[in-house]
Amino acid sequence: MVKPRSYIGFFFGLLTCVLSTDLLSESPSSNAIDVTKKAPTPPFLLRKGPIIAPSYEEYFADHFKKSKPPEASFFGPIIKDLAAPINTLSETSNQSRLFDENIITFIPSPVEAMDRLPAPATISIVIDDLGYNRKGMEGSLALPNEVALAILPHTPFALKTATAAVLSRRIILLHAPMENKKALSLGPGGLYSNMTEEEFKTTLQEGLNAIPGITGVNNHMGSLLTEKTPQMQWVMEIIKPKGLFFLDSLTTSDSVAQKIAQEQGLKTVTRDVFLDNIPTEHAISKQFEKLLRTARKEGSAVAIGHPYPATITFLSKHLSKLRESGVVLVPIDAQLK
Image (cartoon, rainbow, N blue to C red; front, side):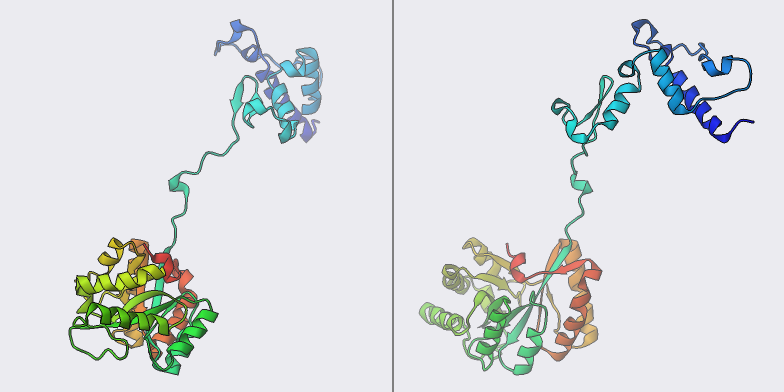
């Protein structure tokens, strides 16, 4: 009775014998493949008596011994190279392995652009109108540090809000009050189109001095003033030497603020979405989804909100789950161009 292991040895022996025939010989005359030529029968099948198949190891060793040295065999260089440590490979092979006369490269192909994962979409959020009450200040400071704070100058909680924001390494903007088309009151530090250049620049400078830690400026209202080129040039002339950026709140589609900022070499960005023109959870949720859609389409998006209880509650709940949407919250200065 033939043991099960004998069949394994038989098949390995048969395979080795076939590969070591004239088809693989080093003789030039045997390079052509003769499909009519029958492979020789392994020697252990020719003898009379019961079939006793040697193990693969036994037959392989016997084959080397009787036909050709291992280094001259088809399998020899392969086994020798595979058994060698990686660091012993020839430097001339470019860290490849030499099989017979062919080089098989194991170095991974360069990563193509299509193989890279796309960068995640990003959003930035700015909370405007801070400075008038403690509750708005505390709620805004409880949001993630990536959320920037825009503070109105000369307001009761302006200094305290700015000081706390500096300690938490949060981006702070001067929320500069600018004239609007509805003639709504601007409060202290307001900038108007009928001001002289000196009055205008002095008022803006005083607003900047009133709030510590400012790194940028954006407009509060300003639907009228941001359409006027001379006044926007005055704004940029004051903030450029200080290295500040300008965020155009875009309260009018005809704003020239970003254009003037770019012309004067300032870093700038424009608001994409207002979160809470209607300060209800349902309305804020719809605007937040619009923000995410814009970010996914354009790669990034900027939103402005206000310290309303509904806004703070909504953002506190949803910003912590933002990564589940495949979007990343980043500081506003990451969006500047």
